[in-house]
Length: 115
Ligand code: AMP
Image (cartoon, rainbow, N blue to C red; front, side, top):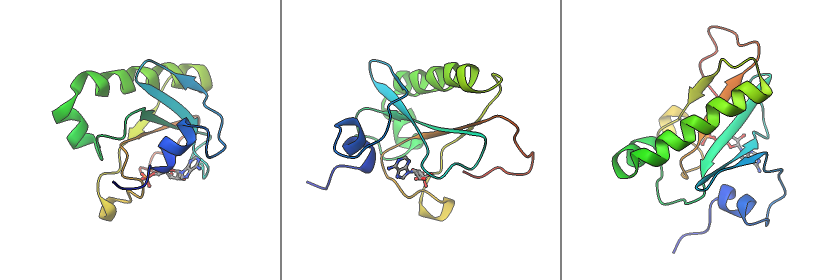
């Protein structure tokens, strides 16, 4: 059994972070190193899926729930428009292997695609 991910530890209250939104199967926090005026992470409560490809194959409804939550948060915290980033694999910058969506909003620089 591997160690719980940082996001599971946040969800369980072992690592301090404010949970800013929650649905039945997902939750959201602010990214600790924001790359945009609004930079949130939307995360399934389960760490069963390591990345978005596994999530899409295994539970497309949960992926849709993440996108719905991202959209509501972008409306609540930004102007409604947003960029959704799923880093997938270490060479694409993924560091936490518990699937999560970066929700970037606010005044985004067009060329800044990364999170
Ligand atoms: P990724 O590099 O795509 O796997 O994204 C992981 C993200 O988690 C990074 O943007 C980190 O800044 C963020 N992160 C890591 N630890 C924390 C934490 N304790 N609270 C909030 N965000 C975190």
